[in-house]
Amino acid sequence: MNTKQIHMFLKEDAPQGDITTRAVFGDAAQNVRAEIIAKQAMVVSGFDAVQKILRTRFPKLKLKVLHRDAAPVKNKTVLGLISGPVLDLLVAERLVLNILQRMSGIATQTAGFVKRVHGFKVKILDTRKTTPGLRYEEKRAVKDGGGYNHRVNLSDQYLIKDNHIEAAGSVTLAIQKVKEHRLRSRNKKLIEVEVRNMLEFKEALMMAPDIILLDNMSCAQIKQAVALRNHRVCQGKPQLEISGGVGLHNIGKYARLGVERISIGALTHSVRAADIAINIIIKI
Image (tube, rainbow, N blue to C red; front, side, top):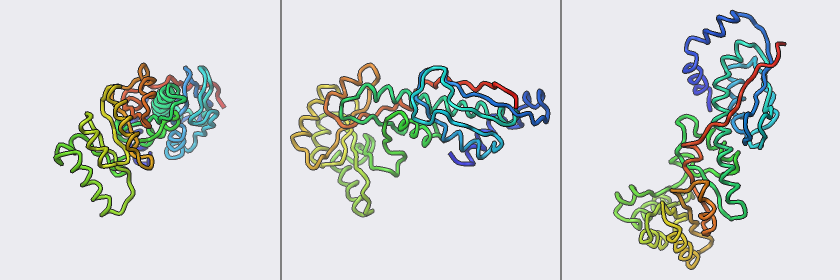
C-alpha cells in the first residue's frame, strides 16, 4: 500500500471531511484512547498496513499493537490501542477496520485450510483472485495464516493456461515457446502448465516443466497423475498442484493424494471479514 492509495481510500470515504464528527466536536483537539477488539477467535492480519495509513495520513494518532500480524487470538482479545485527537480517530476508524477485518478474515480462513492439511507434505497457496489495489496486503494475510503465495503478478512466473494452449496449438508447443523465451531472457523463472485431462497431463509430463497444475480433476485422475509422475520424476520435478472444487469440507481427501501444492482462490475472493471493533474507552 502506497501513499497515493491511502489518500485515494480516504478521499473515497470522506471527500469533504467527516461532517458528523466536525458537527459534534468542531475544531476541538480533544484526545481519546480507543481499544481495537476482536469479537471472534481469529488470526490477526493487517496491522502492518494500518501502521502505514496512520503514519501517512494521521501522524497524531499513536497505535500500540498488542497482538501482531499472524497471531492467533481468542474472542474479546484487545488487539491494540489507539490514542490521539478524536477528530482524526473517527475519520480513520472505518478505513482501519476495513483493512483489519478483511486481512484478518483472509488469515483466519487460510489458517483453517492449513490446519486441515497438517501432517501432509502439501502447501496451501493463494491465487491472483484478489481485490484490485490490495493484492500485496491480501497475499501478506495469506502468509500470516500459514499459507504460501502463488505468483504475485504476471511477471513473477510462467503459467501456461488453457487459453495459451489453445492459441499455441498444443501443450507441447506452448511449453516449447515458454522454454525458448526463458532461454532468450536468461531468467530462471518457474514454468507451470495447467492441464485439464490425462492426455494433456501426459503430454506436459514429457516436456518436464517445473509444475503441472491439475485443473478440476477427479481424485481418481489425480492419483493416476501422481503415480505417473512418481515413475518419471527427475530431480524432484515436476511438482503437482491441484485447483478447483477444493473447500474446507473436502481438502483432507485431496491432501492425501500425494500432490505438493493446492491453490485455492477462495482464500481471497470470497472470504468473510473478521469481526473487529474500535471502541473509545477514555478521554485524555
